[in-house]
Length: 599
Image (cartoon, rainbow, N blue to C red):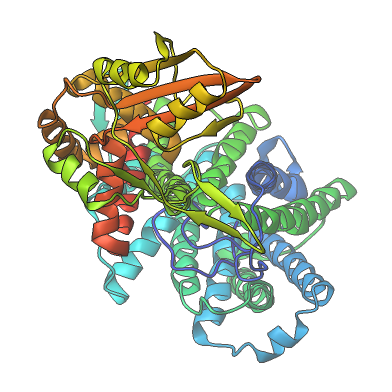
């Protein structure tokens, strides 16, 4: 039971949406260990779910037979809650000293919200333990889980917080679930029935109606506790926990005193007087209740709060319900009817659905943030080549032979002059030439030309690059070469296959899917296709000439600028500035996460 949460409560499990208990004390930059946090939360919720087992162990004359009565008065449940909350207080005081936060406790201003939050949780647990002794386990545990709904209603009434359609649906589901759980509506041999004549007594639970009322009260008080814990979010978890448990002990103590006083003063209510006559077996159960459901469960609760997002934390907390119901079914042989199951599904679902939705939204947001950061980093590292005016015109009008200026950026060929520092100078490529034009140039120098499969992108060996074709051919001739190799590349106009090819490459470079780029950059893709349609596809885009002399390759590259999808997209982002890039990153990351959900 997450008694010490700090953040504004939402509809969810006990503690769901109210913030993880360890949030306030987490050091900046702490990395959550989700697997460890999940295990810790399961252990904690299991400890909470064992409250009915240990409370009956500690109080019943015959642990497995409720009809045999209790070794104390009916108010003993509230006293068991005092012990459990007292152990919680001791645990938090030890934690306060061990973590050296005593100064934070002294500085923390005690406000009505902190006091009432603790008081309400004490009242809730006192009523809950009492309920586990007077009615079925399933009724007791399901009633306390109306708490999140009560919290939402209080927030709606007093803080004017809006309620979404989903929250109204969940509220209705919890209410209907209560009716099913109490057999006021449901199914029997005759079909669906509605019967508002409450079953106030059974052979095993002669005070079942009173027990159900205590269960309902436990849910109301728990919801009120969540509501008050929504204030003072600035308070340190451990320091606030001390105050919470102190007032929780007072709250449970008040219930114990009132019930015991009524039993002592009114003969008709003598069954409520404490009159404790525990056996050693009972005391073992009491100690286990106070320790396992106290420091152990609370300790793992803090570990879970430190390592789980609030929505995950709140959702896993619902593990307490099946643990408690399983205990009632297996240990105490309580029947589990269809109506009880339906009521449980509706109540748990009404509380858990918003938490699960928040958990999914939180993970989706985390994915978006990771993709956004990765994409931003890649875009910043991605150079936007500056092209000379002639080349810019080429991209717009596709002239025959533009000269291209490539800036000295990572991944581009550069001429480097080594002096005291490295000086990168721009390189101007000559236009690409056709086969006939190359043949004429070779003949002028008396060289033979032979076609070969040459590829700029796949070149890996060291080579000497010469920027003028005439210089390369004259050098080859003077060096005694009789022939050179060449390759001429033509690109047809871009079609869907070419768009997909370029998108795949860009997707790998940016770390997002092709589909995401296609959706976000639909306008840029259309612009690219239109620009490329203006290009003369009969002109080559690349020409390469190579001569091998003394085991070294000497090469000349001719390039005719042509539209490329990557360049169109990056140039648009560059023109739009930081705002355009941020908008692209936000949209692309969201689309990427949506696409991941589809798979």
